[in-house]
Amino acid sequence: MTNPIHNSIARVLEQISGACEQAERSPEDVRLMMVTKTVEAARIREALASGQTLIGENKVQEINAKYDALADVAHDTHLIGHLQTNKIKDVIAQVSCIQSLDRVKLAHKLEQRLEFEDRTIDVLVQVNTSGEASKFGVAPEDTLALIEETLHCERIRIRGLMTIGANTTDESRIRACFRSLREIQAQARDRFADRAQFDELSMGMSGDMALAIAEGSTLVRVGSAIFGAR
Ligand SMILES: *Cc1c(COP(=O)(O)O)cnc(C)c1O
Image (cartoon, rainbow, N blue to C red; front, side, top):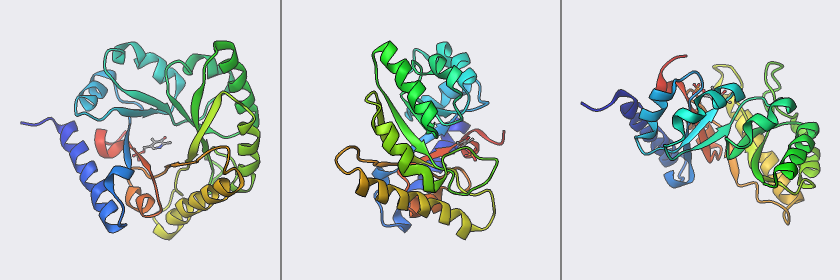
C-alpha cells in the first residue's frame, strides 16, 4: 500500500504536467509548493518523504511551532501569508523566501533587520490582482512604485511576484487575475531590466492551478488537494 499523501502528491503532479501539456509548457518550469498550514509536523514529514522539498506556511507562529520538528528533514519554507513588521525577527531565520511583501514599510523594516543580522533574503511582491478587500497585497497600480522602493534595499532580492486568484467560480475572472500578474511582470522587467529578473510567478492553488499554469505560473501553491480540506 502506498501512502495516501504520496498518492495525492502524485495526482497533483499529474495535474500540473497535464496543464503544462495543454499550455505547451515544460513541466520543469512549474514547481510545486506544498501548503502545510494547519497540517501537523508528522504529516508534513510524510509529505517531504515523497521527495518534494518546498513548503509554504501563512502564519509566523505556525512556522515557529513546527520548526524544530522538521529541522532534520531537508526542505525549504516560504512565508505565503501576511507579515506584521513586529514578527520579522521571528521568521527570517526560518524561511528562504517571503512571498508576501506588499508595502514599503515592510520592505524598510525587513532591510533594517537583515542589516542587523548581516544577511539577505528572497522575496516575492504580493499583488492584490482581484481587488478583493479581504486580500492582502499591493494594488496593481502601486506595484512598480513598491518594487522601485524595494530595489533600494540591498539585502532584499526580489525574485518575482505572487498573487491569489479571485474567489469566484467564474474562470474568466480568475484567469484575468493571473494575466494581470503576468502583465505587471512584463512592466517590471521593462522598467527595471538591469536590476532584477522577476522570473518567479507564484500563482495557482488547488482549485485554479491549471488556469494559473496557462497564464505562466512558475510556482503553484497547493494545500487541500494534497492534505485534504482544512
Ligand atoms: C492556503 C493557501 C494556499 C493553498 O490553498 P488550497 O486551496 O488549499 O490549495 C495557497 N496560497 C495561499 C497564500 C494560501 O494561504
